[in-house]
Length: 71
Image 1 (spheres, rainbow, N blue to C red):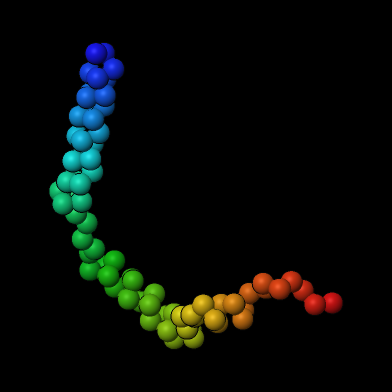
Image 2: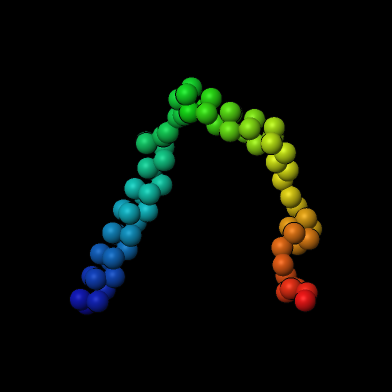
């Protein structure tokens, strides 16, 4: 009987924790300020200006050493 009470208490605590975790993003939202958005845009512009190119998996495999070194 004590085991059943312990399991029930554990389930109730787990459900309360789950409800808090689900409600937290809705209650405590985060919005970027205009300064943060400007800094992020400047960083993106700098990457594009300096030749940043997003690579796909084939490009990554060509650039990394997956076969070891040649003597």
